[in-house]
Image (cartoon, rainbow, N blue to C red; front, side, top):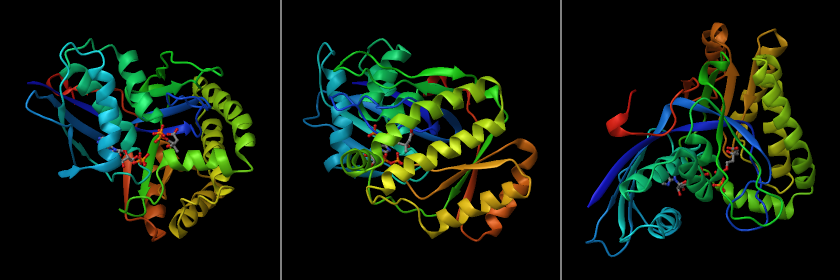
Length: 330
Ligand code: ADP
Ligand code: DP6
């Protein structure tokens, strides 16, 4: 039996990935840039065991079947394809935050799984290869392999099977920024991001507009980060999120609830009154508020006062990418 345990942190995209190349392999249609977040993490143990006749997945203490298990088995199949004497695996994983709810559990989940399974199989743990492996299961997971601010290019335009890994764009201390994750529900979302992207590409009259605008917004976010200009970065990140959601809206996919929209208004009111604060949202109802250190306490108080937040997680950029438990330096 060969076992390895890896930890990966979730990330939140400032420039959103939404939409895939039409060919196989899960290549993004647009470039994205994220920040890896301290405090939101997944721990995954993979054991390859000769005695098993199928792969097994225990997620947050519950045995999984169906598409959750299939997604994990698909990654393990890629590992088995290069193992000398392949066998099935037992996977035990725990997310330290809500699963399938728009808090990027698939990102930290598949980054941790890619790292743990590579090591448990006795393969070379080269981070680019781990990031590419994670991307094939969930593209945002490619970014969670690295710490700090992380970019992921769009896939090649023509059919490709080449390696596409994320890379560190800037270190965690490149910008003073907190992400106040406003959790508005503990429930799982009704439509996963993979299916929502597929429907957006097929049904949204705004999808072509998104594909044209996203790279421009990405370039502006990269430029703001290079200049450590929080205000420009916040504005562009908010625009990226709202443009992405507009494309999904046009395919009748609405992730926001009343609380989501109320919080977006609160953020706008705070900004109108002179506080530098911006919002972003992913494939779920939670609002993530971008704010700098001096304003964290005041903004947090206002968000809680709104009555629309179950709890606020104050997350900061995390310097660490994926790591193994015996090397963990938390
Ligand atoms: P989220 O916003 O949480 O990323 P997604 O719908 O994109 O939501 O992905 C959630 C799915 O990712 C889950 O249904 C499950 O299939 C998978 N997933 C989440 N956490 C893990 C994990 N720790 N290990 C393996 N798969 C996971
Ligand atoms: C809105 O990476 O979950 O969070 O590749 O189909 O697994 P798949 O999609 P996923 O999508 C993330 C979408 C997003 C934006 C982002 O993280 O860039």
